Length: 211
Image (cartoon, rainbow, N blue to C red; front, side, top):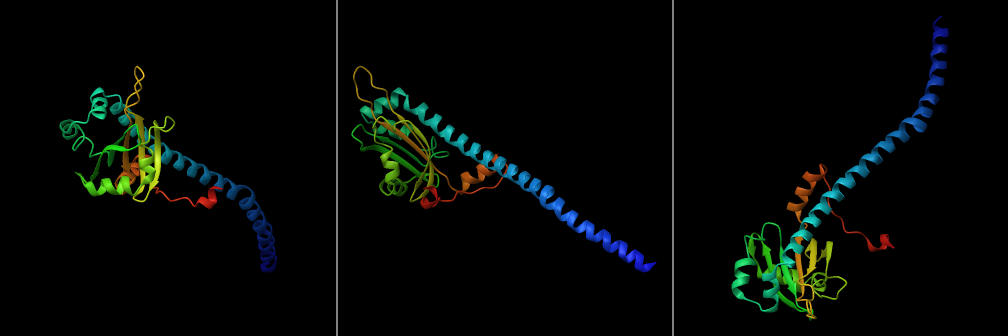
């Protein structure tokens, strides 16, 4: 009797094990992979949407400043009083790390940088002098005057938005380009993680992988 029971159990196991692996490999595991892939895509979409919302907010702020008549007048005839009143903390320090205006000839008409809640000449030099990627955005060449996105700099990734300061009127040249930039630092990443309901970080892409 025991021998028969043992043989039956061996037969059952011999049938069960291949059936289990067949079900796992053909049905369970592929479905598990599909679910994980769907969740990963959803997480990436949430992260991307959170980042795009932040870029859109910066672009809207830049566009709102660029059409300001007083800023247009300041661009054509700089006034120290205007700069002290409107281009310094606390107006921008909470959301911006750099505000700059490119003159029609491509030079930097003025720029204000913020670090640690204060206006910082060191940060200004680091962002503009050591980051040609930012300085190039200040050139009003007609094709890159209104842009927004993420740019990599020696100081790390930054959200940027540029806008033509004033549209040509009666044959006048545009007054220049307004640039706003915000560091995509740990503080901002933490906010984006909370908004996206998932943790993510930015990595530099290997150019060789993009070819």
